[in-house]
Length: 217
Image (cartoon, rainbow, N blue to C red; front, side, top):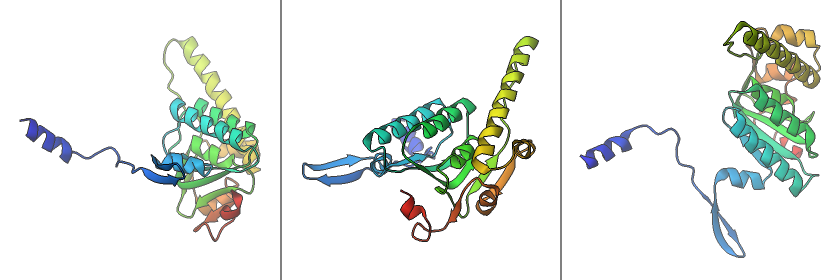
């Protein structure tokens, strides 16, 4: 019975594949590290999950660490995220503005909702998207529950968050807040080229060699 259960368990689809360790050779011998740690050594932060308190804390910690390592070298944030919490967005956003290094942002796959704001918040001239990327912006949302007074408080907070989002996008795209307000009324989806035209990114790239990305780090 145990063998049959083990066989069935092994046959079940897994949530993700196992990341291989990368073997680093040094004068002191060999040691293994996961790909994310290897990227961090190259001053690359990879945001490939939903933006919540946990992932936001991870990104902020990496940004602060890289700043302490070398405040004059660029940091790159590679993004493939469906978005997430607004407060987690503002935590990462404020940290990006706070640290001293220039921050290059690169969309690979998608940057939706909160992730699109982070993409746009990179250092001007250093915001990129691969050619088949998908970028989406929309207004913040929340579920209203409780007494009428609670719902009223939540409604005011939603309006505050929306106003803040409009200001953020206006600053980084060069568009007027009233234009942003109209555009985020419903989901607004961009191709990479459309995102460039809108001002969310500076360059659409196919390869590192053919873009400014090679010199942005």
